[in-house]
Length: 111
Image (cartoon, rainbow, N blue to C red; front, side):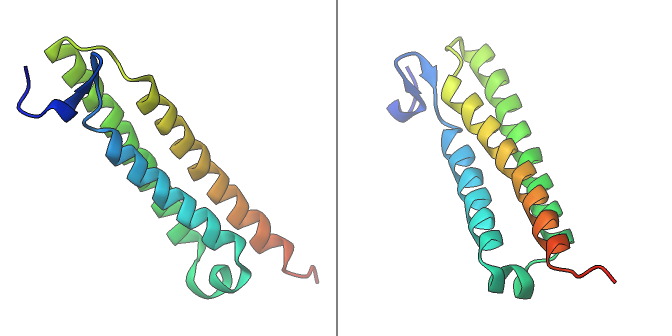
């Protein structure tokens, strides 16, 4: 029915799933970078962590929103994996922000 058979799998539209996997990979790389003290102190600052996390969540929201519109228009079923990927991306975005500020405030001595 479609140009490429990879657009759907057993009645579920899966074309936008790789975008969410990419955003999840970015959030996992940022999470790993936050756990390594040398990278956290030399390469990352609060603005970078917050902006990258917010942009990733905004893009994930748009992907899920447009996914829902496309599924509705072509009459396929929704994709629960995409929703779970969005939730995991949002979780890691919040975790990265909390982790950065927790680790950065813990190392500073109180004078």
